[in-house]
Image (cartoon, rainbow, N blue to C red; front, side, top):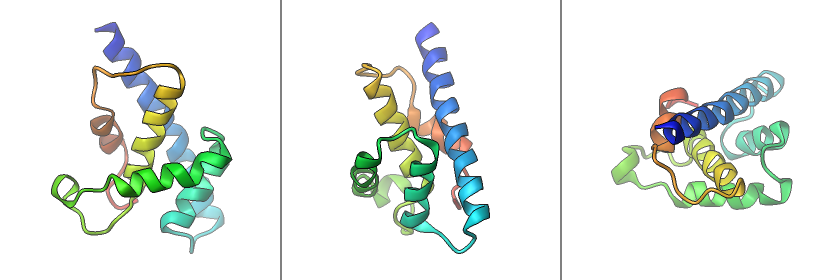
Length: 113
Protein backbone atom coordinates (compact mmCIF):
# COMPACT_ATOMS: atom_id res chain seq x y z
CA UNK A 1 0.00 0.00 0.00
CA UNK A 2 2.78 2.44 0.87
CA UNK A 3 4.48 1.65 -2.43
CA UNK A 4 1.33 2.54 -4.34
CA UNK A 5 1.07 5.88 -2.52
CA UNK A 6 4.73 6.63 -3.20
CA UNK A 7 4.42 5.75 -6.88
CA UNK A 8 1.25 7.80 -7.29
CA UNK A 9 2.85 10.84 -5.66
CA UNK A 10 5.92 10.41 -7.85
CA UNK A 11 3.88 10.28 -11.06
CA UNK A 12 1.71 13.25 -10.09
CA UNK A 13 4.78 15.33 -9.20
CA UNK A 14 6.40 14.65 -12.58
CA UNK A 15 3.13 15.39 -14.39
CA UNK A 16 2.75 18.70 -12.53
CA UNK A 17 6.26 19.71 -13.59
CA UNK A 18 5.56 18.77 -17.20
CA UNK A 19 2.23 20.62 -17.25
CA UNK A 20 3.84 23.72 -15.79
CA UNK A 21 6.57 23.61 -18.45
CA UNK A 22 3.95 23.00 -21.15
CA UNK A 23 2.06 26.08 -20.02
CA UNK A 24 5.19 28.27 -19.95
CA UNK A 25 6.42 27.11 -23.37
CA UNK A 26 2.96 27.39 -24.94
CA UNK A 27 2.58 30.95 -23.64
CA UNK A 28 5.99 31.97 -25.02
CA UNK A 29 5.44 30.19 -28.35
CA UNK A 30 1.71 30.08 -29.12
CA UNK A 31 2.24 28.61 -32.61
CA UNK A 32 4.34 25.71 -31.38
CA UNK A 33 2.64 22.33 -31.28
CA UNK A 34 3.28 18.62 -31.55
CA UNK A 35 6.75 17.18 -31.33
CA UNK A 36 8.58 20.56 -31.44
CA UNK A 37 6.50 21.70 -28.46
CA UNK A 38 7.14 18.46 -26.55
CA UNK A 39 10.87 18.78 -27.22
CA UNK A 40 10.90 22.31 -25.78
CA UNK A 41 8.87 21.21 -22.75
CA UNK A 42 11.34 18.44 -22.01
CA UNK A 43 14.28 20.81 -22.40
CA UNK A 44 12.62 23.40 -20.15
CA UNK A 45 11.99 21.28 -17.08
CA UNK A 46 15.35 19.47 -16.88
CA UNK A 47 13.70 16.15 -15.98
CA UNK A 48 15.28 14.51 -18.99
CA UNK A 49 18.87 14.59 -20.17
CA UNK A 50 18.88 16.64 -23.41
CA UNK A 51 20.66 13.78 -25.21
CA UNK A 52 17.74 11.46 -24.35
CA UNK A 53 14.92 13.68 -25.62
CA UNK A 54 14.86 12.27 -29.15
CA UNK A 55 14.91 8.73 -27.75
CA UNK A 56 11.99 9.43 -25.41
CA UNK A 57 9.95 11.07 -28.16
CA UNK A 58 10.68 8.15 -30.48
CA UNK A 59 9.72 5.59 -27.81
CA UNK A 60 6.53 7.48 -27.01
CA UNK A 61 5.58 7.64 -30.67
CA UNK A 62 6.53 4.02 -31.25
CA UNK A 63 4.28 2.93 -28.39
CA UNK A 64 1.13 4.46 -29.85
CA UNK A 65 -1.34 1.73 -30.55
CA UNK A 66 -4.63 2.86 -32.06
CA UNK A 67 -6.32 -0.17 -30.50
CA UNK A 68 -5.49 0.96 -26.96
CA UNK A 69 -5.38 4.73 -27.33
CA UNK A 70 -8.46 5.06 -29.56
CA UNK A 71 -6.75 7.92 -31.34
CA UNK A 72 -5.58 8.54 -34.87
CA UNK A 73 -3.94 11.85 -33.93
CA UNK A 74 -0.56 10.29 -33.31
CA UNK A 75 1.86 11.40 -30.63
CA UNK A 76 0.26 13.45 -27.88
CA UNK A 77 1.51 15.06 -24.73
CA UNK A 78 -0.01 12.25 -22.67
CA UNK A 79 2.19 9.65 -24.34
CA UNK A 80 5.28 11.81 -23.89
CA UNK A 81 4.48 12.42 -20.22
CA UNK A 82 3.88 8.72 -19.67
CA UNK A 83 7.33 7.90 -21.03
CA UNK A 84 8.95 10.63 -18.95
CA UNK A 85 7.34 9.28 -15.79
CA UNK A 86 8.45 5.74 -16.64
CA UNK A 87 11.99 6.78 -17.54
CA UNK A 88 12.38 8.86 -14.37
CA UNK A 89 11.06 6.01 -12.25
CA UNK A 90 13.45 3.55 -13.86
CA UNK A 91 16.36 5.99 -13.57
CA UNK A 92 15.76 5.99 -9.82
CA UNK A 93 16.52 2.26 -9.81
CA UNK A 94 12.96 0.96 -9.75
CA UNK A 95 12.06 -1.97 -11.96
CA UNK A 96 8.32 -2.44 -11.64
CA UNK A 97 5.25 -0.66 -10.37
CA UNK A 98 2.13 -1.58 -8.47
CA UNK A 99 0.12 1.30 -9.94
CA UNK A 100 -0.66 2.15 -13.55
CA UNK A 101 1.39 5.20 -14.44
CA UNK A 102 -0.59 5.45 -17.65
CA UNK A 103 -3.86 5.81 -15.75
CA UNK A 104 -2.37 8.43 -13.45
CA UNK A 105 -0.83 10.43 -16.29
CA UNK A 106 -3.95 10.25 -18.45
CA UNK A 107 -6.16 11.35 -15.57
CA UNK A 108 -4.00 14.44 -15.04
CA UNK A 109 -3.47 15.52 -18.68
CA UNK A 110 -6.21 16.50 -21.06
CA UNK A 111 -6.43 14.47 -24.28
CA UNK A 112 -6.25 17.64 -26.38
CA UNK A 113 -2.73 18.61 -25.28
